[in-house]
Amino acid sequence: MKITDKKYFDKYLIQIGNEIPDLIKKYDFSENSGGFDYLTKASAVYSSNIEGNSIDLNSFMNYEFSKDKFKIGKEIEEIENLIAAYGFAQKNKLTETNLLTCHKVLSETLLIKSKRGKYRIEPVGVFGKSGMVYLAIEPEFVEKEMKLLFGDISDLLKNSLTKQEVFYFASLIHLRFVHIHPFRDGNGRIARLIEKWFISEKLGTDFWKIPSEEHYKINQEEYYQTINIGVNFYELNYDKCLGFLELLPNCLK
Image (cartoon, rainbow, N blue to C red; front, side, top):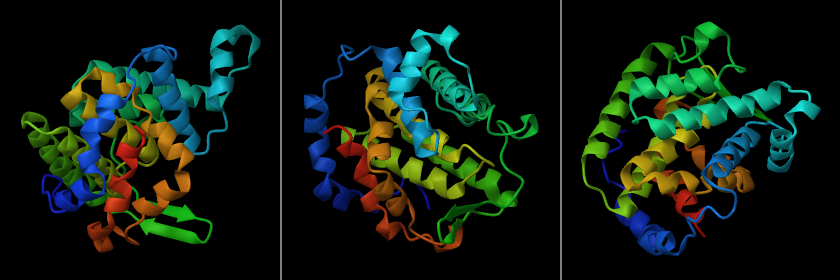
């Protein structure tokens, strides 16, 4: 699939896209809820929670206030590494090289050193309660697919886009990235980061503040259901993608 194709854009506009400018206009981008750093930490906590991390936002912030009174564990380190990855993304352009650096940072507790910041060389499946629900592309084709994806991203970053188009393409990038599943671990975390990274490059740094990760966590069942549009990479049916694409704008409501 070529991300820059707008095959589903007209339907997207009808279902939710036409609401996006008004949703952005009404959204409170002020930092009175804790500031930019706080919102970045919240993003990392919720994104980690989606992957099974049990540390909630309240517990993490209390740890931040009194680090000397808490015993640091793997789950805390996992969140701190993801915060660092967000921090790197916020200061750097969205490129393939910088994405690999982000993965290297966030995967410190997830993978052995030789696997961090590098595309996988193993077959990978996604498993649910009943067994495998999705088989990703073979490892020997991962780099090629990522080059194609970043070719599309580069084109989109160069072109002038409407707000509706930015959100549409951001969600498609997220979805396609998850389907390629380029890393041994950390794919979900970095997919949610790259989505927000793209939006912020196109619309401004304020958009790092939008609560997309929290919205995905609250609606986790729907999030996973709408990602699942095929049993393997070769049987993906993007005609079913609109359910997923609707989730991101809804985080502004």
